Image (tube, rainbow over all chains, first blue to last red; front, side, top):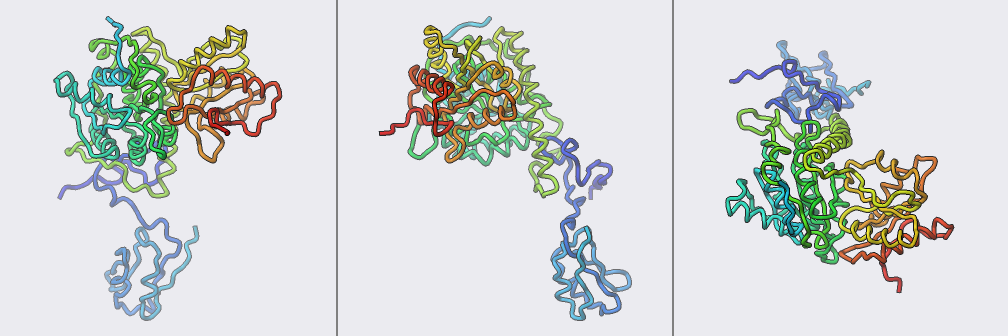
Length: 105
Length: 394
């Protein structure tokens, strides 16, 4: 598989000024969508209480954005770079171990 | 050497496009534009022009094909009118937003309903916010020169924007006029082949054009586009200067006519300027202090240039061949008036809507525009600052 250049190598800023954008906003390299962190418009984030978690994996199963990962200890964590804050994990958690907490910003 | 010929104005456009050595033409025939692309397809069929002519099923496809071709670095031309421009509407913004230097001739035609093939500027005025450079030509010579200049302006690295050259359907397109042509060697000297831009569509170097524009990026893209269109004025002026130095025909944003010591100026764009000049001559013979400001460039809007002419005059009569229905009058009138709004000492601005759907605008119409403006200046009360000049009231 071809090794793609990193974000830094491409000098792509995620929020460039109007002068830094290429004319017309052209993206000069392929496959740059992997640099785009889609979780930046979330207003609530899920917080998992490890003490309550029974490691059933339902949050991982239900997450529509694959933003929940399994840790080496068998617990689950949220990848906030991609979590949209939809709250499905908190809704589905059978032991109510997940709370949706409002983002501060 | 330049030579003087008689030519139909539509064919003056085709000739300019041929001399510009375009690579791709994609167009759909529509009255009153048809003669332009008809002639171009003849040139290609005869082997006089080495270009791809793409026959498409609609104007939406015509401009879409132009967008793809232009993105590869080709020199591209299309032409349309009225309903055709309306059908292109979506792609107009994409061509401009993707910064593609397409040149398009528009034979101005009224929009339906009622079905009208005749000329007015309601088609291009309905597309005025699409981010293209917009020129309005009066005659064959301006069409020919502006189209050749348009490629050079559009393709300049500092501009990279599409240009539309607009001229009245029938009253200009179908009229045979004198034209001082340029030969191929002269045009080649002025307009070298298009340089392939750094980021062009190519299978070996994939690039992404027009991806999703989330709220975090769209504002910056619009600001960049607005900045580019405003600043294109400097390149336009450089190109006009270079053209003047090479061929002795000088262009500017405005062509003032008998403006010296004028109290009232009539301002308009397009083919009726010739009639307006005749009206100014008649009025001047009677000692009336009136002049004409012919506007050639609607986008970028010439704020500074306008102010150079409005300092000395008492009233400005703006003639629109389009109407912003339910708005503040003709689009040209509303932009001119808002451009002058912040001035302390500004002329009275009146708007006249005339020539809708090919209604003839005669010398007497311009004389009544002048007389009405003079009366308002003398204190006559009017209901509205803009009026339909030719609408029958009974």
